[in-house]
Length: 444
Ligand SMILES: [Zn+2]
Image (cartoon, rainbow, N blue to C red):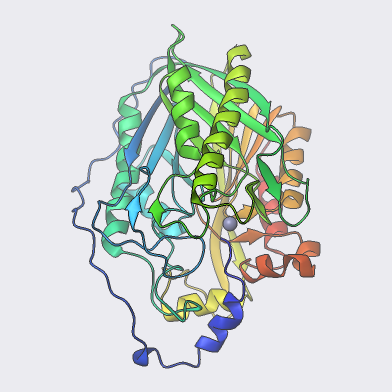
């Protein structure tokens, strides 16, 4: 979430307006119909210690279908397609536990969507769905639709037809990855983000420099999947862009796939408050496009060098732990967007209580915390350090996982005027601490 400064006050002012008097732009629904996906996940067939499969599926709305682009200002309509967006799945099976991690080129997904994807996949496979926080993708949360004077959102930005297709495709990519599962070995590596690629707008120089890498290879060395993980808002193309794009994860994945084979995934990390590509604010579209390619090329270069040195690790057990968390939000924005019907209801009670979830995936030396929002470096690095202390040498915080609550701030940041914007799109002062406590309570 970004660049909706003044949103809260504008929204609250908008509560007093008569919505019936507004002229709200309308648009056609998508012209492609969802497949009738009712298939359940194929039964496990891994006869080895560890199997993995990977797949990608297109999520690009067809040309001619109007789409509100998410992440910056309201009512930013898609004019063209720069490059396609997709969802990618890494499936792992140790013969006892089956896990599918899906990462989609989207701004974020709310938990009810994730739960419907899980239901489509069916029993027996644990499914986690994260997003790259792509700011050049369709509005899949509902915030970025028609707005009065571009300030007060009055109608959801969701396209129900697209959402239905999306959920089915997210389930389909899991089933495709399962069908492709083969015996693999896993290798882990870490690289460092080269200087000059990302910046912290609030505290310059403070960010997580780690690029955590995982590769699943056949025993003959052929690549099955590569996962690259680091924290940065996927918003290189900026708020003036009107062309749908995967932003930097697109060319990054293409470079990894070209060298390592198989399917590449990018999962976002510690990106909140406010880690963003280090492109000048006044850069034009051409300069932004060039920086996007530069960022992807630089990250791919150091990642490929690290992967070339990585040796397979003996791993015969995967584990995915998750826990439901009750939070209470006193953020008026949360109540507004529910009342107006911009987003799918979280069933907020009068006290603002709602449910979300956290999780952790353990894979040998790696632990990946799954966090339902955008942690700041202060919060995210604390979570990583907890996993390091538990002996995990490749910790990662996968943000925007299984829900998107907005910014997850330390209470000191919540009270700091420097983070006044982030606080308006945060679930609350103590939300991050509560999520951290539940994460820390998961069995080691
Ligand atoms: Zn954000």
